[in-house]
Every structure is written in C-alpha cells, then in structure tokens.
Image 1 (cartoon, rainbow, N blue to C red):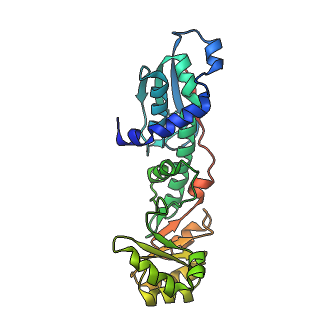
Image 2: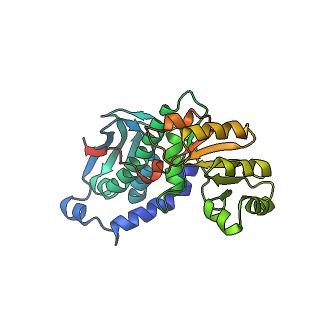
Image 3: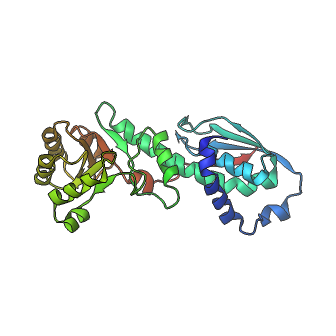
Length: 280
C-alpha cells in the first residue's frame, strides 16, 4: 500500500458509506446472483490527463476485501486519448458495481482538474510563470484536488490557514494598514513565509519599503501594471498574479514577468472528464 492510499483510505471509506447507506446495493443484490463474475474496463471517452486512479482502486479493494483483480493501464499524470483503457477489474459483478460510481466520481473529477491545469500550463509555456491553485476547493477534497493540479503540471499554493501567512485586504483594514500588519507578521518566526496582497502600485511601494514580505500577491492588476510591479520588485520578492485569469488573459499575465499565477477555477469550476466503466 502506498502512502497515498494510507492517507486517503478514510476519505474513500466515507464516500462508500455515503453511497451504500446501510451497507447494501439493493439493485445489484436483487438482480445479480452471487458468484457472477465479469470483467469491466474503465476507459477514457475523451482526451485529458489522468488523476485519481488510486482512489478508484481503493474503493474496489474496500468493497471486495481485496478479492477483485485490478490491472492498471495508466498512471496519474498520464495523457489520455479517447478509448484508452485506464483500469481493468475482474471479479464478482455485485462488488464491482457497488463501487462503480465512487471510483468514477473520483477519477472523472480529479482528471478534469488535471486536464484544465495542463491547458493553463501549456498556455504559459516559454514564460517565467508557474500555474498554482488556491484554497477554493471542495470541503474534504482539498488534498486530492491539489494532487490533481500537480498531475496537470501545476504547483500548489498553501494547503490551509496554518501553512503560511497570507495577508488579505481585510487583514490590512482590521490591523490598521500595510506597515502595522507586516510589523506584526514578522513575529510568527523565521520559518513562516509571509505573503501580502496589494491592489495598487502605491501599496506595492509600501510593501517594498517595509521589506517584511516574502511574496506579494498582485490582485486584479492589468498586465501593464503587473509588468511595472515586477520591475519595481526587482526579484526581492516572489510575485504572484491573481484575479481575472482565464484562457484569454493568462498568456498576457504570464508575459508580464510574474513568478506565479493563481487560479481558483482550477478546482472550483471544472467540468468532469468523461470516463466510463463497461463490462467487456
């Protein structure tokens, strides 16, 4: 069992419990005889990038007490073409069908995130910018969604509020300004990274003058302002652009010279990749 399996088995157990309720798939129970064996194939029905296959395997193993035979044809991060085989499952039909939807839900959703991330990564090829995700994730699925971002070639932002200090506009307002909030942030210790959000170049100048931030988030700035911001930062901080990022704007944002482009839509607005499971 991999570390990934150990960490996420409980999540899959919870998903199966939600679906099976009192522990029954009454459709399969009444329609299928015990001992009816089949071979099923999970396959891609459109092009994309695979993510989440190990979660599907966990689901099938949990419902069968590891009695199903699983043959993996593709790994997370692999490119998929329509009709590609992803996973073959052989064994009792009742068991396979009881975990079918959970397995497909994980793979289709996470593959959609990986696929969308890969599209953004390709769009900024040749620039300095890395594509990163945000905390705009579905409750309970954050680590899985962030895994899918990595499978698509993106990078992860912080995983939670305890990872690093990210000073937003409301923090600045509540603490009394940029300088006071940066003064307080430095007390967190030398191991804690400090990022601060700014909306204007004047705010950026105050952050630069203070010198207390490791990363600056340039929020909803047009590419011309982003380019000027990068010039002023002079490599003294990591620069991150956020807000208004889509496939039409991301290239222009990347060409401003920023280090990171964070995109909430990688995780909160994706259409599932079409993945199917069929009996051979």
